[in-house]
Structure formats: C-alpha cells, structure tokens
Length: 109
Length: 116
Image 1 (spheres, rainbow over the protein chains, first blue to last red):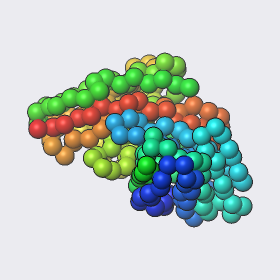
Image 2: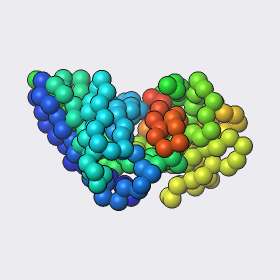
Image 3: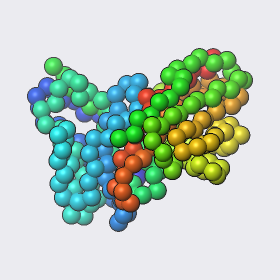
C-alpha cells in the first residue's frame, strides 16, 4: 500500500509554474520526502528530496509544511520536455521504495 | 551518481520459457532492488538482492518465479521463470546512494518484456 497520495493527472501550458501536491499523512519521523520523474521507456530519475521546510535545486523546489503531512513539488516555467510522470515517495533508510500511482503531467504548447 | 546498465533492453519471449535479466552497476553497492512496472502502472518492488545472502521478496513475489542472483557487489540477475502473458512488463534494477537517512535511488533503463 502506497504511503502517498497525489493527483492522477495535471495539465499545464509552456511557461507556467506547476505545483503538484502530495499527501503523506502517516509519514514516519525518519522518512524523507523524495520526488522522481519518469519519462516513457526510462527508469525514474531523482528530482529533489527534503525533510522539512523548503528545498530548492536547479530543477525544482519542494515545500514541506511543519506537520510534514503533505508536500508540494514546484516546477518553474515548464516546457514540453517536462511532460512526464512525477512520483512522490516518503521513505527512510531501508532502501525500499513504495511507489504510488504518480501524477501524469501533460505540458501543452 | 551510480550508472546502471541492464541487459537486454527488451525481449519477446514464448510462454513457458524463462528470461534472465542482468544488472551491472559501476560502483559497489550493498543492496540492489528489482522492480516491475506493468503497462500503464506504477513501479512495484519485487525483491531486494543482498550480496552473500538470499534475496528478500515482497508480498506476492516468490523465489521460484523470480529467482535472483547476487554474485558480487556490482552485479545481479533476475530471472522471470515459466513466463505467461501476465508477466509482460518492464523490469527495472535500482540501487541507492546517500547517507543514513536521505538517499537517492538510481534506476536502470529497464527491460521491456513481452510474453506471447
């Protein structure tokens, strides 16, 4: 049973900011929140990871409120190449990843 | 970051036969993970492969169907045995790198298996 819940799909247009929210109500104290991106015919690719508050890298930002029961992946100014499935996971140090259904993001011109 | 190579990248197999998928990592890792991704679905963990011990299987997966080898710290194989069309999926190998709490998973490009 997946530990996270996120929207099945989202649509956006090029140049827009996209925010994908994920719920993880039962997140464990030791769990980190990690987002992966998957293109067709490829394995998932790490995007960003955080524990609390805000994390930013060259690709995205991750917002995590104080209660850590949800998180929001923010993709600034998306392009057509950002069309992919985005997975939110909460996991500890066991190495095992439990994937939910993910969010299929479709970016339109 | 770890680089993972999987072979074959795809195959079409007859039902009742077996296919062995190879996974090679460019660095030594303690654990390697095998996932299955059925068409249009998310990834499901099959098992964890540890060097020097038997693999640990997740609920719904058994060693007789998915035997795994882990002869050293950079290599693993997954065999899909006695295949049926329901085994048609993408099979992915994964490793993790990182600290005690925060880790990053790296995946191979996957093996697309079609059983006819």
